[in-house]
Image (cartoon, rainbow over all chains, first blue to last red; front, side, top):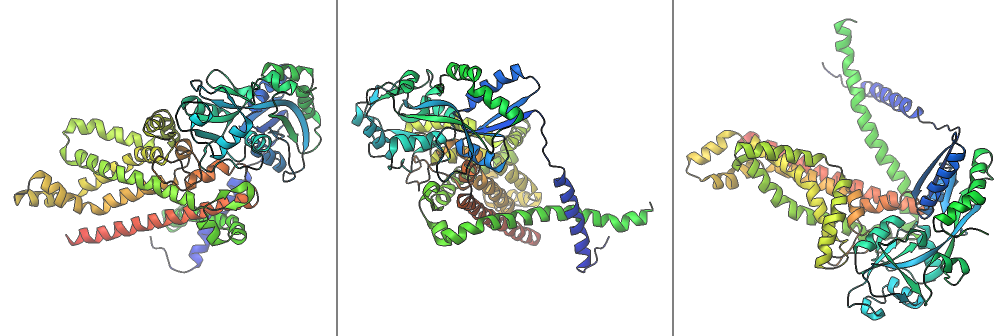
Amino acid sequence: MKIRKGWKWFILPMVVALLVATFLLVGCSSGSLGTITENGSTTVQPLAEKLAGAFKAKNPDVNVVIQGGGSAVGIKSVNDGTVDIGAASRELTASDPTLVKHLLARDGIAIIVHPSNTVTNLTKDQVIAIFSGNITNWSQVGGPNKAIDVVAREEGSGTRAAFQDLVMGTTLVKADAILQSSNGALKIAVSNDPQAVGFLSIGYIDSSVKALAMNGVPATEENAKNGTYPIVRPLYFLTKTQPTGILKDFIDFCTGPDGQKVVAEEGFITIE
Amino acid sequence: MSRYFIDRNAKYLVLACASISFIILAAIAIFTLREALPAFQHVGFIQLIFGTTWRPTIGQFGILPMIIGSIAVTLGAMILAIPLGLGCAVLLAEVAPHRVRQFLRPAVEILVGIPSVVYGLIGILLIVPLIRHIGGSGYSVAAGALVLTAMVLPTIISISEDSIRAVPRRYKEGALALGATHWQTIWHVLIPAARSGITAGIILGMGRAIGEAMAMIMVTGNAVQIPTSPLDPTRTLAGGIAVEINYASGLHQSALFAIGVVLFILILAINSIAILAIRRGRRVQDVG
């Protein structure tokens, strides 16, 4: 076999290859009847999964798919049209696209440390100083003489944005903080490191980490509900337009008495 | 269908298949460059590549800490993996008894195929707590380098061993006949003769190390800062893209594509050096 020289013999194989590639791509299309897709905030994710389960029990012909990714992923995905519902764990700002907000629940953010840490309370100023890197040793806040390992969330996290807004204010989290990409990953990181400190959704707290009181107020769901613990943010289901059909049914279920019962069971604050 | 018809036209089918891979490569390069262009225009080439602050929420896009982070973990991995890999290759090719090799070689080949997430998991469970005992939080350049060493070692071992085995017998026989000891033969004759293949294996490993995202996200701590010690957390280029691409939009997304361009150039450079090393080695070997 000899391949003759000349540009003509180069064009033909290229055309064939392009045609094959095009045919392969054309097959990708999505169509759904009876499927609701959701993604976004990892704070909302376990709650959304329980809500989806409860909704499917009453409506077995509807499929509800729940994913995570962080609040910024949820906002972007629902705006791009890749999912039906985007979950966010913070207020929308002027730089966010315009979306329809459905308030699902409220949730507090607690400062967490390893269970062996002797510190039990921090003032808000101490929290700001620790996360900005001005306080670097636990002994400076009444703990053991060990360096503080600051663990934070990735920049797209709604929990981080709410923490920045409600606690840090204009002070930035220090640049060399360890970043984890979900509530779950952050909890694991803090539970494995006796010197770590992080911020976590109160709904995620269990015996593997210890929640600190802030300014003397313990970080519990009751205190977040009655307003004595001030670090509280809304949890939203966002849709691009006003929902209709099964999407409306699902959202009405979540914001109605059945859904709110699930919200309370999961450790979040119900909407009034 | 006459066999002459098939003979005349099969070459076009085969050429089309080869063209698909070329088209994919060109498409990747063109698409990445096009998406990265806004970042280069609005942030500026110098500020983007050499800036030291990466805070997308306030519009700061400086990639330098991630470039240094990638180079640091890759260099650390190479410093550990090259002597270990070469030593193991020499063991498998020249020193080990047949039964040991029968057991070790398949083990190495299985390691090549293990997905990087698994290496990352082992990093989180074993390596990070170990380094925490030495200092810092455990999420560090050192952790990244150790995980990368584990990933790169099987590649270096298998390619280096094949290269050493491929050295013509007459080299070894000639050296031994002249009175050299076995080790002198290995060190002064076999390894230099296998030099090009060993270099290719090392550079292939380096390419895998620089492009590794998943495992690095899990063990380096993802802090965008220039590391001043192996115990400091850092972020790699590939890890930096993967952590933020899902939610980035606008200029932020364009800056992530710019990181992709930097990675693309780095890997192209590494692979070009590999091709040159192989070609040079072949010429030298033909003369012998």
